[in-house]
Image (cartoon, rainbow, N blue to C red; front, top):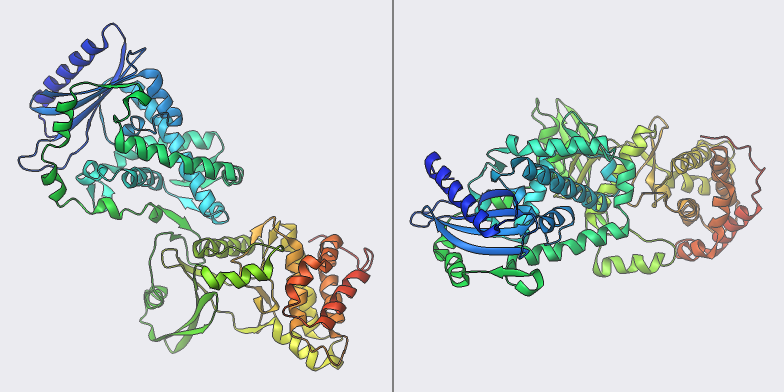
Length: 576
């Protein structure tokens, strides 16, 4: 506000008197004063907005313009019941309720307005969490969210719907943050404590963790549809509030004065260089995901060379090289850097969006068997979330060193060793040494690992033998989790591993290796506590049709026959 204390007192009195006169005998519950175009421009007077809530007000909604104490003031008087419905469920697309999101001055009913503000922010915070759960269904359980995320997420969504709100925010921002951020966060802290008490979140050490139950509830299609539908009335009412008097039962008095005021010095307003921070706020910088090197903001941007420098903050890495090492559906790079005459290696994976003809063959290949996640953002989230899930449960997985969500990059530990497909090829080339070979021991261990992760409800979705790495010490690492999901198709994991293993075998001569590998994997899976029925389903045409493209018919037949002959008591089972 540019008004001094005496001017503000006089304006407050004039507004209060005017509203009470308009309300007549009806009770005025609350009055709030907002500065809707707060950018200060020479020779361009500001436009103030006043909203009053009146109990049992007739008509239900009334707007008019007055010139008070040298200020253009738009006054809106709304029935208290309608205002509270706008707070509770967006009855008017939050056209009036959303004013409590921005700084306001209470002229009357301060306690009432604050309680309504808390109710509104509680609903909007829950909506933000729901949207995060839908956008990052696996990663949401690992996110650490600062209260600032909700503050800026809610503000930015309103700015995108109604760009003129940029004027409202322009001079209350500095260095991409609100000047009075600490004060604005007080109400958000209050709401988050309430949600913690409701057991929807855990709010501790100034971070929000979302409960699994609420996250799962938020991921239902009905929630996504409801949140999507909300966008239309918000945009409609926020942008054109007052244009549909019959629908809203709205009476606008002094229409010409209102329009004249709206046009007042508009060209000058539009030509003004506003604070660009309004458009560059990224709420996701207040969301953090865990890595082996500590938490990383979801908004962090970094490239391979900057990462190499960041990885050794106290050293000067030399001879930094970035080499493409493969990838069809993703780009995969190897970073090498010399530090104190020691070579360090890091794998970088860039998650591309699968679209158009790149995605079409995969759709045809797996049609009817499973659906693949195609969004680069979603696949990156799955990779990070599943890696953390498995690591916490004792599985060997490459450490995630850093994540850049905007660049769709994941930096992870380089595992020295060989993938399991090479072991299978050796077995095929030297069948005489198959018995008691370390290669078979590894396959049995993989079966046990699959049973263990299935016991936790996790399915990997891409279980080709080349996604199993054996390091130089013989430890087995699982790789590539971008198609992983909770409560997915366990049989797909088994079918892909077995039939893809058959892809590396020669159909002639028939040396029995396909049967040995299948029996060994099944033995490990059942001994690890896996269910026989899950294995039996792998011989279904639903799966054999998909993998027959890669594996020769004699090998496919051997694998399915081996699965058929497996019985419940073939191997002694033990829980993981």
